[in-house]
Amino acid sequence: MDITSFIIQGRDKALLYGDYSTYHGQLSKRLLNSRRKLGTVTKNRGKFRKAEQATAEDVKTNNEHVYVLLLTSERAWAQAMSIKAAHSIDQRGIVGRARSHIVSRLEKAARSAEQVVRILSQTDISGATTIDVLEAQAYAALVRGAMQFEKNSWESCLRSYATTYVIYNALATASKSDLYKDLLSETVEPSIRFAAYQLKTPRTVSAATLAKNAFPRSDDALVQEINRIDSTLLGEAQPESTDNIAGSETAPQTLNWRRHQVQIEDAQIATAWAAVSEAKERLSQAVAKSQDKGLHEVAAAYDEILIATQDAVDATKQAIDDIKADGVSQSDPRMQRLQITRTAVNYEMISWRIGRNRVLTGLHDGATEEYGSLRRRKKRDATSEEAKNERELPSGKKLAKLKEKGALYDGILQNLESIRELPGVAADEELAARIEAYEQYFIALKHLAVARSHAIIGNSANALALINRALSFSFKAVAKLPNAEAPSDELPLSLDISPASVKFLEQVIDGELQRHRAIVHVDNLRKMQAQSEEYKSHAPVVEKLHEYPFGGVNLDNVVQFPPGLEVMPVKPIFLDVAWNYIQYPQKEAQAGNAQATPDTEAEKPAQKRGWFGFGR
Image (tube, rainbow, N blue to C red):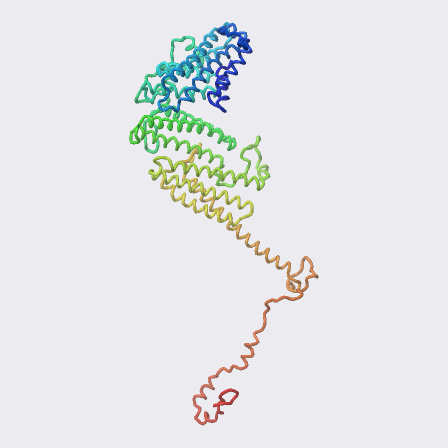
């Protein structure tokens, strides 16, 4: 009959676009249609007659009788929720006639649901299966628990919700459906915890233990059916403990992180942290067996641990919110332990996010230049000749893969920035230094990926500049990382990076730098040669007489006409003319001049003065 699916789908469909009043109106129409199918509707202007109670024989002939009872119960529940929502903004809260009206509506809903249980329990007559009976009992306990919740009858409320919790867990185990899990996490577990809180039960007791202890064992048939499906749900109940986490033998009681060992304050956190440990072991096994799988298949194995760590983060946040609502100050030891737990579980979650991105970047975090198809694997082993002759990817696909790597590096850098914002990380100098070194490492990888994309499209100079920049970042990472802890790059990958990996990246970038320097130099030589050849190709024949014309002579370009202004070598004639008028003194002449008499000087002609010999 799919009772749970019938109820949940109706609620989700109505509440998706409306509120509880809309749901109440829809249920009235659906209930009228069901009664018309059964022929029990009162005719127009006819005398009202009370509908007869449905029996197991009626259900055997037509399941619509069950749906009429379920719709009746849901309509009363929707009306109660509508009244509760309307009075939720009142300053005094829901009191007086409003609360009594809500309780009466929920009481009616519970009676209709319990009538379904009584009818379906006669399985030999009604033809219902054990799953149908269990779903009816869980739904009846759920509605009854809502009514007792509004009456503030916390012990009865806890017993009703415990019945729902155990039955839905058993059904989830049998059917592997997420429908029951969503209902448990969104409705049942919060109600159990609130009722336990009102009963002064410690928060360290898990919801599973609370449900196990409060489950009514007077119904032998129900207990026997639950044990048949899953015997662990109703095992020996453990006593409540204020010091230790109860409810699971494997749940950890303490959490270790960065030389801090703190007691786990909430059972939900302990359960989630235990799930993280189990997911980590399964991830290690999956990665060890995935040597022949593609990177995307290996990255998919991280989904479980990412979900588990997210659950731990949510549980920690909920515990902090609850303890704040109780008026606990920040200086309280419980709050301090929860803050350390919050930092630890967030750090764990971000570490695995970064590890998943590192897997997707490829070997050595994408430092090596690989453009092969990462998702496809050959079914048979290829020989070395086939590997050599493998067709290379086109430039467009190479650029797309480098763009994906750049996006992965951006995600890693954002996650590293979120780690810096966690409480207590900035005060831890060693951890802050490691995070800064990791940041320099991934910035260098991003620059390297962008440089390779420039090299593919022919911008070798831009590629050389980016690689030079990446080398400076790798130097910073190498300088900062040896001072910190030296984690090993063991599988599965997470945040921790070994100094050997950073040193390997530095060597790769240094090699790429030398290679691109040579490429840029060769490109410059080619450009100069191309410019020279272009000039020579346009020069006239008369200027190329010293070259042998292998390709023939272009007789249309023998000389340049009309001639243009050009620089040409000439003889320095002015220096030659001046040479004829310069007389350099000899040694003999200098000696004769020294012995010259005044008479000789008198024999010298008079020196002309003035312009053209005139004047004084």
